[in-house]
Amino acid sequence: MNTPKHPILYLLTTNFSDPEAGPGVYYCPYCIRIEGLLSAFHILRETLKIEYVDFAKPRGTLPDLTGEQNQSCPQLVFPDGDDEISAQWSVSGVGKVRAINNTRHIEAYISNRYGLPLRHP
Image (cartoon, rainbow, N blue to C red):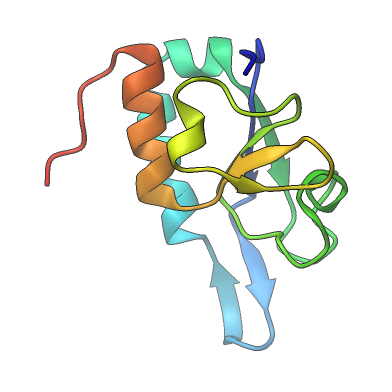
């Protein structure tokens, strides 16, 4: 396994519309949780590549890495494959790409990888 220098964190932009959910403007509650980590621990903005994508699909370059059927956000994508920590939570992407697509698993990975406090149960 190798250690990519900069995993890519995909987050939805805020203030999006979703006709299926009804009228109004929305934000993703899962992405906002990760935004909280980015605000509290500034090292994350320095070490992760962060891509904001629109709610409408296709979501930027995300489907090129994870496949058309796997465009949920947030996602932490490892273009060069897993590192020694991500393997326990990641799923397959396109080719050697791996991704963590569960918000709690992203939080756990970030805490473990960067030596940050753990999420309180």
